[in-house]
Image 1 (tube, rainbow, N blue to C red):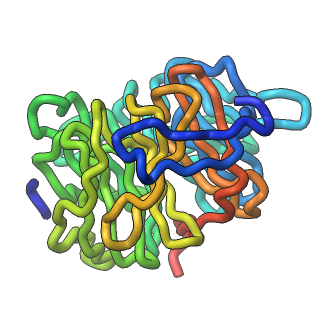
Image 2 (cartoon, rainbow, N blue to C red):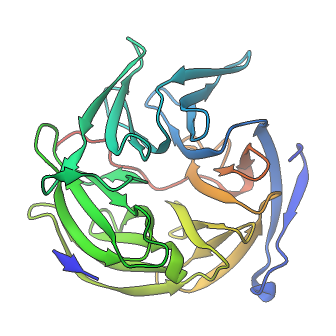
Length: 297
């Protein structure tokens, strides 16, 4: 274990990375949401997100937004190959799964090392179907945040400790690397991921993202770039494989929380933004990298 907008609107960044300012059209998919987070696409192609302050998982339909009330404070979201929605619940301190057919949610894991999980935040499946998730708790001023790994039916195992608010995460390099946002140090960490032994090998500071709050959720593009929502700075930063920021895209509000790519490429990069309560689309950013879905090979 390691210790350590309207259709056609143009997005322009006006931040410290001025030379990296990029522009692309941004569309508002949905608004008036209660702190949207964790955008994700289900196997059937439908777009979902959570509303942390609304205690629900939400999806867009041709008619309106459909909400599934689950209680708690849902945060990160991902789907398994059966269409089940796995989500972190910071309020209930648990990893939970919504069965869409039944419309009911159940708790899968709520304790690690014999103690309640410390406010799970974001999650992703690795290449062997293990769920990797962050637990920042209240680690804004003390390095008490941690990273965990979970197999269905087995108590989560610790992967890393001593982090300042570990937040968004991504499995990069075809699952061979794990990238984690340490929000309150304004940086991304990257290390090799060993899916058989659940080890994060040689994690190291990889990209300095900046504040004032720091990096939140992230998504891998088919172009090889990692797109990072920077909460409090009102932008998405694109990071190349060397850890260098190569482009900056503005968000209409200052609090983008997370992002996900539309597998079809139609909506491009989808971003949740909490200040204005919107789900945004950047169609010009194309497709994302293929995600793992929790099914063992």
